[in-house]
Image (cartoon, rainbow, N blue to C red; front, side, top):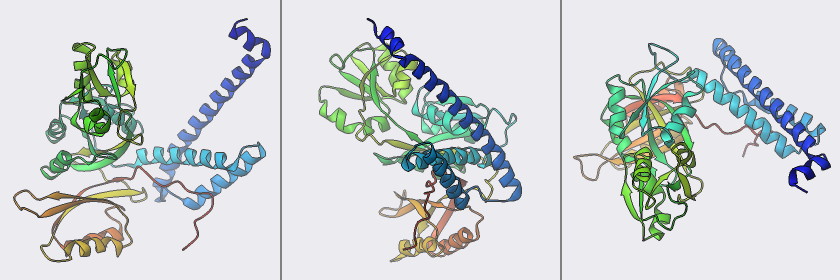
Length: 394
């Protein structure tokens, strides 16, 4: 008796069909909820209300949990599901309100990014701009400098640049590029990175050479170091690495995503080759100029500053933020070219550039630095989920 006959005789087929129908209904309702979120964003913006209302979020979660409990669902499951719905609504609202450029065709901005189809940069561009425009025109570039040049010269409206990774830290070249031009940071996106070895080979046995972007190879250092029989070679992008794997036979593989392998008709030879499974890259979006986001949107501001050459200058500079109750989310030091052993500091903090507390903090910072420059203000992508119970004061 075949498996299909057994399923049909047991009635399992009808039960599975009913589950599929319910899943379709859930997806449709979730889509409707998301569309209402767009109307909510517009209504809040007109009323000047903040995007986040944590008291309302707790009310929504509590009501949902109570109703779900009546359906036999656990609190942990129903609370997390409600949080996911709220997270999606906030993401949608952020996309509507975030900083953006004015283009000749508001629906189709040109976006410059590294590599081509199938790269992590392309995936990040699709995810970031999906909530901001109905579509975008991709402009593939061979390196980070070309991305900045395309935006600076007006060939592209936006540029997407990886600025830090959870395995290898900050990407120095991108920080240097931010210093060398006047582009503004107008957005951010966190992209999950799942590196694989892909190629024409069906197994790892014939592979002797692996191509990858320098950042990708660095994120897979432990795995590749253990394979001393494999030669590592740099490629300008994962798209370029894939081309080597396509053109040079079974002895050559590339570090790329499984979706890129599928797109180009290659095999996934080995999965999970990054040093850590939790591998994320934070991208920034740059533009020549952009309308700033409204103050009701939870925002992040990026700056760079040079401290005074005096003992305690950095401590006093950072105190400007703590004294104004501002949360620093990133602090990255970089050497100052031409000034040996002196450092500049890139910082991200939570807050809108026009908030009184931010204005106060930047004023205090200017008293403790030789120079400070705002790199951009934009919607904060990652916002902590609201818990059902309000946290107790310590």
